[in-house]
Image 1 (cartoon, one colour):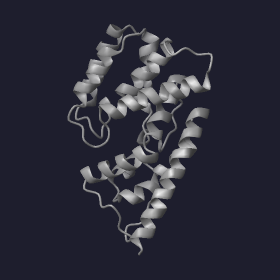
Image 2 (cartoon, one colour; image 1 turned 45 degrees about the vertical axis):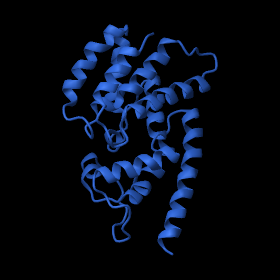
Image 3 (cartoon, rainbow, N blue to C red; image 1 turned 30 degrees about the horizontal axis):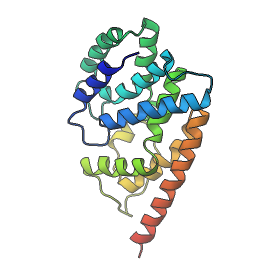
Length: 217
């Protein structure tokens, strides 16, 4: 299946994005999600329709994210028009849209949504993108773009219990590691996701350990 229309749409929608949720993030999610699926399912084919569904949801997922999209419903309407043009069936479109609308961390704080198989891999890949070296870079990019402090020992990490609290509470970028990033490994849906998340989380824990050692000199 030819996904060039999808790719061009995402490039246009996210061309001004500078908080770590740009086209290249979507591209990495699409590629990683399909790689994890193929690793877990060695009899599957890279040119299957399921892989195309996984990659499409991966590319598109942040185009309707409330953090970076001023008019999610308008963009969603455009996506609903675009997907049949690419060749997806009504059922495939339903899976892609459900994944996009229910996969985010904030949407799952109060209620855990059961995603389709394709969505499980996209969600894992998106969360893995918040871990490791890429995750560290994205965390500080996002924090800086939103005026968050790097660290303040007087501001303690909080337990996240709702969407609104997650969006509105005072945080630092280092606190974000404790409040969210270190917890993501436990939320993986797939075997491939768990393996990759563990490796990247260990890398990130070592970074924060070194950061705190340097801070406390």
